[in-house]
Amino acid sequence: MSEGVPIGLRLGPGLIGLTVALALYGMVVCQYLFYVPAFPDDKRLLRSAVLLVFILDTVHTLAILSFYSRTLINCRWNTTYACTLEMPWDFSTALGTSCLVSFFVQWFEAFLTLRSAFSTSRNSFYAHRVWIIGNRNKLLTGAVFVTALVQVVFGFALLGVARYTDNITTLFSSPYNPVNSLGSAVCDAIITASVSFYLRPSRTGLPRKDDNIQKLNLVFVQMGVITFLNAIAITILYYQDNMVGKYFTTAPGTMKCKTYSNSLLAVLNARKSIRDQQEAQAPPLELPTLPSIH
Image (cartoon, rainbow, N blue to C red; front, top):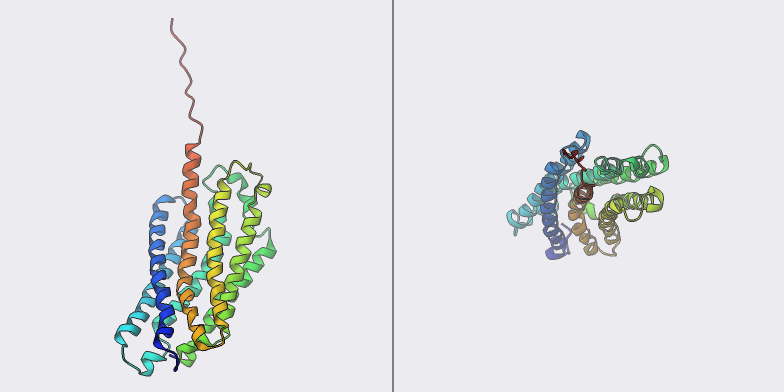
């Protein structure tokens, strides 16, 4: 890696991020195992999308583990170019899968989650009113498409430059890095703000005491804020005066993929408690009484 930077500052932030990312991946596994049996009636497209995100997240986890195990164990005390500066295949895989997960989750949350969120509830009448990222709102659709596309295009551009130079430090000096993260942050902000605005009780037409949609909205906003803060942190940390500060981007960068996977699954699984609450509040079945025989 970069000469003159202590090894602790070069690898420390990423190792801290890896520790948190492994915990977040454990949450992803638990949420996925909860989702599969809880929602067997979800559309095949949605279930396939969730499976794809889970597989990509798993590949990201294995790749980032491979990178740090090789760097910290196999390459210990080794100062060759292959161990210090070369852009390795596993880190490239981790970066690529992270970009794909971010892109897919932003699209799934915008187009699929809200459509399916009310498909099994008694509020399905309002589904067309709360699905606001669609053909009826071309401005928001275009904004989500452009910002999501920006982050994935510049993410792979960053990966391509690093592979071309075969130098891992390119990741911390390329201008594609902050554009990729800023695109993710802007896309998250658009989706979260739009959902929060359009799911207000005054717009959905639901009484305030019927807060099922508001509960789902709260989970959606919370997850959107987490992914937004993670992406914007990468952008802010990139603009440091020295190379040491830029290495700090590896901490939120390692966690980025996990925050998006958890965001998608958390929003989908939030429907379970809402559905159970609605079933519990359903009026009891009134059986007709038999006439008395005298």
